[in-house]
Image (tube, rainbow, N blue to C red; front, top):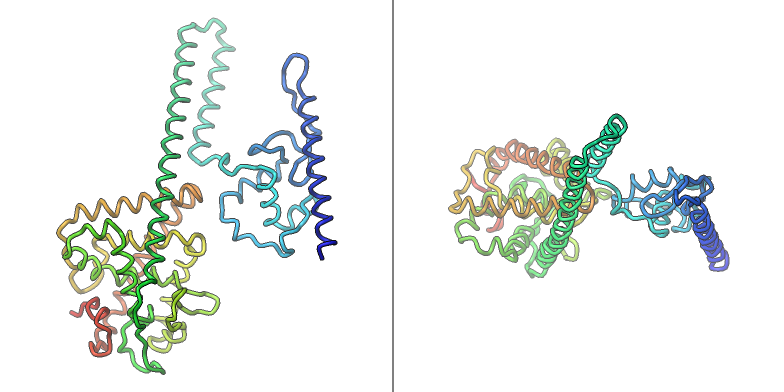
Length: 416
């Protein structure tokens, strides 16, 4: 196997090196005696060997590879799969066959995804181009432009450059702090598994609706206890007074459990299971048998839509669990009254902090468009979950038997 694969790789490497050397010699020959750089048409793309006309994202590449890199570089590379063990040859004829290998080669030859302009930078660039054109047109129409206007323009341009550089430095600092912030939340979330509790199970088959939808969705009471353990590891939750802690948990954990369920859902087998635990798996068939096909379809549709976010990036949902914990008004659609909190302003500021950090994290890794889509999706799903709980709570209260529910869930279910 090695004798048939590695020689091909060596040949492709030598070919890439030859193209790079040729490009270097060609670029040097494009400067004329007057010091002006002329556009060259005999450059070769270092990705697919097609005709190139210059640098794109710090690498000599053709227009096709330039557009391909811009479309795919900012997304998670794990979503692209190679059918040939990641060893596809990329050329003009084969470049469309395997996106995974083409993107890997783009990165391998030195293309930089950080050079892809955001929507805001594109608007700024277009505005500057328009301004430059107006300036050149003004120079053509009036060759006797006053020197003080030229000095003013240069001064303004220098100010814009300095401000942009300062903003870039500040943004870089915020991104570095954000990485540490998100990492700490992920660590606290993973450490919740260390809580050693005996799982709560139920007898088979499920023939009555007395266990409560919250227990069916999350399978065991340990899920709620692990989430509380996760929250206790956060400084912003720990500094709150005990009354506010209890009331936030009682008011919001119903809804948080839905978001959390997406983290342990397997859409292929339609099963819920907590990783790195000995918990019993909960199958979609259990929900369908206990609550009927309509409730099962609505519930599964909600979880699958949330799972798409989990699949995109595993760090997003743990932060979402914190944001919704510090929420006021999640229970507005329910018949029972929402628990009162004493320090509403403090809780509101904490929630804003986590929301801003999540926004920065998604913006840094996936861009402005994607961050808007994800936040919009989360808000929409929250409203659908509120509506779902409102619609089925009557059935829960009608069949509710405190003796059949563990103490932790019993304290969360607010009967009328």
